[in-house]
Length: 229
Ligand code: SF4
Image (cartoon, rainbow, N blue to C red):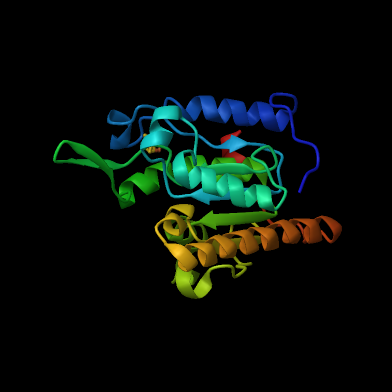
């Protein structure tokens, strides 16, 4: 990974990302804008070769405006750190930028996003990816993998840690376990799942290093790259 963490706001990419973030923060393109505390935009280094994408913000992300905080976020930070990666080395974001939840028995519980919500929000994740143009995308959990990889992704159990090379978003895309899933395991199962996370992220890191030595051929730009900026 990049050895020197980037300082925000010092390059055109940082500036474009800041502008994109500012636009996203006021988005009202789906009903989730009425119930969110705030939009949770991506964070990290927009000049990174590696992007991590989860499904959407939960309670603590909604409260802080930062993706992957709370217990699952701490575990993600830990397994990244084991591989020598900090949040300043990567871009961490979600498919959906506002929390999707239902209130049951007086408690707000996260729910899967609806098709129309994902469809409305797709503009932001696509714009982030188009701006960063990463070499490697890591899909954190099945829902993100389904959106980024498409129908070729069928099962986290069978396809976790595999490379997908024919998506429209990056030369190499890998689905990994969601840290929240890992945290639901106990004893040896927890240790095994945590090690899988570490191993998969190490392979993602090593793929970035390999691609920097031997860059893949240029890819045709997506339409979104031409229309967003
Ligand atoms: S979820 Fe996405 S599309 Fe919906 S309001 Fe939030 S930012 Fe806009």
